[in-house]
Length: 551
Ligand SMILES: Cc1cc2nc3c(=O)[nH]c(=O)nc-3n(C[C@H](O)[C@H](O)[C@H](O)COP(=O)(O)OP(=O)(O)OC[C@H]3O[C@@H](n4cnc5c(N)ncnc54)[C@H](O)[C@@H]3O)c2cc1C
Image (cartoon, rainbow, N blue to C red; front, top):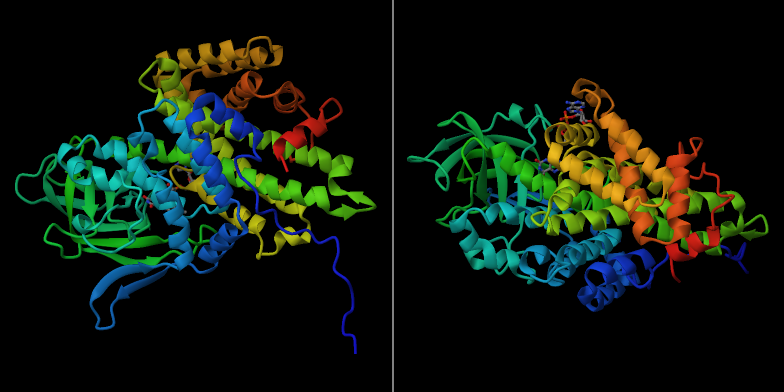
């Protein structure tokens, strides 16, 4: 008997077996402009990432989250985190590509954009692995200021060998670092930390301390060391401590992992809760400057959040476009329906603008010492971008999911994973309001940088009356008195980002993209409350959509 009830047709497979760099015109152009030397290696990486097998590894790493083994079989405390082999395979790819420390190890101009492109591509396939990678990278500029530690760790931080072994640092070829700030009673308000550090001997910079207290969020607890904020009792001030997993005598440090968080997304990554029972630590940075020290680390991790969210948005767009190009409804392909075209154009514009901003910030990080313009982008635009791009990806990964209809909502798929991953970026490393308040703080305290940013944007907006008009309006808003700035910090950050993105597209992208972006984001006041609510009458939809994904 023939049990078959129907033929399956018009079901579209997920987009895979493609090259993430070659298919991305905007990314290719950005790299050609800033780091052409890296294109060959990154194209090969983009090919490996896009393989169906790599997507399968990402899926497996998220479907089999890490497990905490707090004790061994005989009851000894080991606090070890066990990962699925797929985690090691994917994280190993990133390390072996040399991306963890690239911007600090490489000397050639364009090292930050080259790294940003690699990070952006990896993040599209598997984002959880980039948590320890990001924290390790961001610890480097802090460790570089501590000569003895830097001497001991430099080679292992710069190494591109993947070494997941859980042994003292001296026995490892490469290492991972994490960060610990957030406690139960307060995360954003780091000054609410109750963990204390007592000096052993005279204390002071580089000196030994014992830490007692806890961290409520402590991602990647298997890292070889964490940079931890605690209150130094000798100076009664907050300080940053280097807390390794093993003490100098090779015994395990007293950092007890109480539990791993059960998270909505970011499932491949381990985020723990820990207690310090007189844990060994070394004081980093100036005494009393602990919060400033750890915030410097967070400035770097915030850039990664921007690029990571741009990446989630990009991959959601890729899957949505590929689906819409093949799936048929009401007698034609989804992409041929006028209203769907408006949605896809909106996603494509947002995605390219997010990438442009992330790449500009990467350039700014590289050239922050060169002149005030770059420093201004780093200082003012990083928190603004972290606020805006991370929030946009939460909404727009959901919109991309809907392009796939019911298939999008099924947890077996890539888009579902992107959707569940997106909110974390908006929360960790400083959540939305905290970012906007940081923008306002920079605007009210860093007059020189504000002027540098305004003059850079003015120069870039050249020839576009909408941009120049919006910019002068924004300048007026910035010059309001500071008390008024706080309550309008979200409006201000939003406008700042939209103008900056408009300027970047105006300078670097095609007229079709920049005109459509500027008109729909900054001119037509009816646009933009939800994706696709834009007037595309004067938009070259074919040009925008074919640029978005070369197939
Ligand atoms: C998956 C995951 C992993 C993490 N990993 C780590 C880690 O490894 N290390 C680490 O230290 N932390 C980590 N965190 C913690 C994260 O950084 C904090 O959750 C975050 O900084 C917010 O702190 P909180 O949760 O205490 O929220 P709160 O500080 O209580 O904030 C709650 C809300 O109030 C808002 N808010 C706060 N202050 C103001 C204000 N002045 N004005 C207006 N609004 C305000 C915030 O924007 C937020 O929306 C992780 C978080 C997650 C979700």
